[in-house]
Image (cartoon, rainbow, N blue to C red; front, side, top):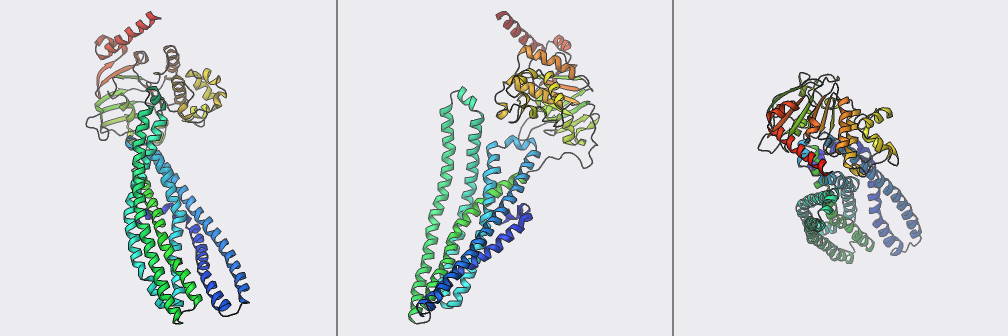
Length: 582
């Protein structure tokens, strides 16, 4: 029960609903045990005793208690379900909140399909046990307890003989739980892998079809699907082994009851009505014990799901800043790296090594280098997506750790190379970083990013609902929306991570012209592969294996005839070739 104890904070606030459900369950169980008593009276008094006039009264009484039981059953199920639904509402909200504040290193290894499975299937399995599993456990205890009280009242010897098999049944149930729980844990993990495979396939469908890998994907899914099937069959095998055994033990109790109970009836130590009632009461005990396998089934699934949910809840969140962070203010944008190093988790080499440079307020910094040279790592540190391994990173002369993360990022506008747009309106996407932005501000930013014209041509203009990840827009259109989104934030520091890579040369020139205007007074970092994107920068840093190998202005670096000059010559030759072909 350790898993349920640790998750208690999510369901204890709604314990009143569980208590009402429990009270109603007591009525339901008590009335259920009364049925055999009515049967005993009808046989011994009405039929055998010849008092036939009592039977209509018994029938009316039975109808009355059945009505009460129906009402109590409704109350039990309604409040039980309410208990589960409200509890997992709180749990799901906390899980989602947790995911928002987990550090990037967590998502380096996490899989989308697995997280989706935890927030849906695992949460639902936990809810089902809260709503029905707890009630079934309590019903088991109450039903067995009430039935045994009535049975002892009728015949102590017969009760003891009948219950002789119960220890064996309890052992079988215990062993069943020991085998079924690890199996369900494996099933849950296999289901998460299955969901991950489906999610990756759907997200990468364009790549799958472009490379004609439909058959390969089908086979890969088949392997994952086979694993899920195998895990479920293993669980079915455990169930198929233990359930007949539990049923067999229960039937032995019935045989003992008929044999010894028949003997007591012949000896006039038990009436026919009492024997009939006793037989019903025995199944009120054996039935729930056999059904305990189903309850354990639910419990094991719920416990396995709860363990997977706790794995998320136990993850260490990143701290937004020290207890006494600096008061929020508009940053000036002065950035200094002093011998800064960064090594990602589980990596053997540093991504950045002893990096030192200064970016004065309002300056424009260009970052150039091959893939993996460390350009994006500088941005990761500026945004505090990751924490530096060594050195000192200052903003406006103060350590970056002194700033609250949220307030820091409100001062930084970023346009990533891989543009992500939400499945909402263009207006909402543009105002995502500044929900208070007016329509005039949104349109002005769109015009600066050269996005207003194509937005106006869409069916609903700025109210057009985008498909998943901006489906329906070209890569260049999505990037222009991302640029406008960053502009609306009015940041002190602007980061452009190859932000014009998906636009044509003509559009790039128009965007750069507009952006030079908004860069005024802002510290801007431009990561680019095109020299044309960085040649106007105040400083250009050429990175190689996490170190700055060249630095200077465009003209200075051309004179050095190093890596920068080689990149420039190659791109210039390519451009001349394209112009000649045109």
